[in-house]
Image: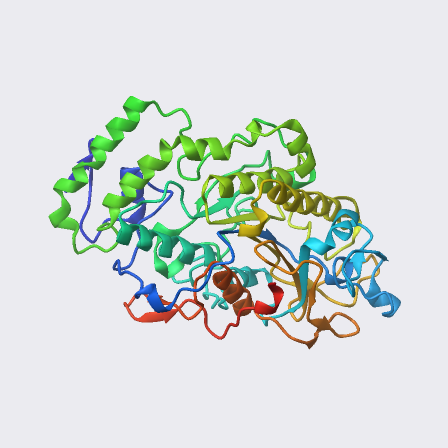
Length: 477
């Protein structure tokens, strides 16, 4: 037995993960790490890197291809939708009238129009963020520790392994997430964003924005400076923790060292020493605290991105990349249960969603370019699905996984290009279909990581980080 804060807690195989998390104060990193094994030698599995980092802009809910970047003005009235295309700088691209800024700079990004898969609901986010389909548990619909690791978690894993080999620890986590883990503003915890079976040590360092109440949609309104005083998830409950209390907690954690012999057989606790150290480093990192503070940006820059939650979160993403993060995910959620998941009508798409996306996406491309970062940053904009070709009488659309677009920019992407063609109703690929595994392979390849690289699975067997995926090398110059 080990006594912590005067209360006995079991530290053999009967200890719960929650008890250990509470005891060590490192809940942001977790401890369900399988046997720690290094990745296979990377000598034959590295590629010339086009990108130093990735900004992964994820739009939850499924923007309609017919209202954004794959419009079909010649389609029947029940399909083509209420919006019309406008002129843009990309030959062959028809772009919505409600994306005027994107149309004016479409020569800066490439559009892939033929992404498709077979998982026609929102849990396809796992497939998009990992390259692997999700095998939905029978009774649990949230993320599990058996899920395939996210692309960002694999990057985190490889960077941590490299740091161990070189003896040069990174000053910033490689994988970071804003403004909150996907689903947390709705009361869910969606799969695909975590390290899954790879181990919680490789989860993203996530911020934890909280909305005002159950009816609040901060993506549709201006967020305050107080709201953007973001904290690290897992440490945000005690923002004013004094140094002496922090040090006392550390001394309590050191009690675990004396019980090492009792817990060596427990895989959920044997790796806690480095997690403890990392937790305290993060809690006291001036570099991370500074990067998280978007309030240090000029009013002009913040206005340019948009004062809504998405705009400020993407600005935060740029700051995290600038501070040294390697894979930053920024997501636009549907906290009202609707938003981009537009089953009913297109009113919000016209008045809030497309204008907000148009403003923020063009702002970050311009900002990265002005700072000399765009050439070394791959910017991916995607969702988990598109919408049905047939619209309702009020111009809502249902889920549609058979054909939808995603955008790529930076890191040598041939701006102004269009990859793939959909059929006459934007319902199915007419040529060059693209899978989520192709997306994963493209991202890894851009970072100089071979999609054929193998890492150990929970049983220690070498497993390819991408299966059946091929990088879209044609997108790059």
